[in-house]
Image (cartoon, one colour):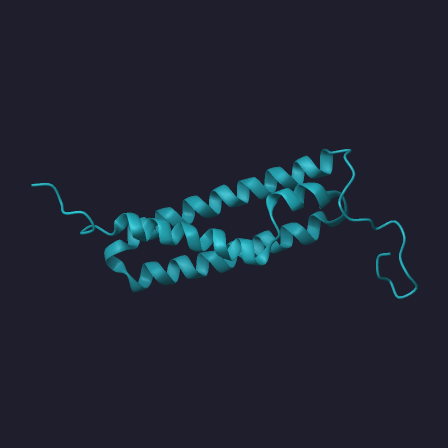
Length: 118
């Protein structure tokens, strides 16, 4: 007889692991779209937060894998896949933004006397 619905939670562990990577990176960064739009002015800062987000996500995925040895493989596969996909999206967005001639959504041309953008 087939396995009863819900008795195998490896898929859930996979999705939770992948989801936490996306959530942590989203919490640390804006989005690939924002990176592309503003890479010309803020590439280094935007990518710094991508790297920090991926590092944080890795810590959580590794901790989850350590706590849940039964689901270690789907946790690691889901987290690695999501981290890789998000990293590639940000790298692409950064490169596309640096190569783009479209106007950014932020202006850095003029600054007030206190150094803040106008």
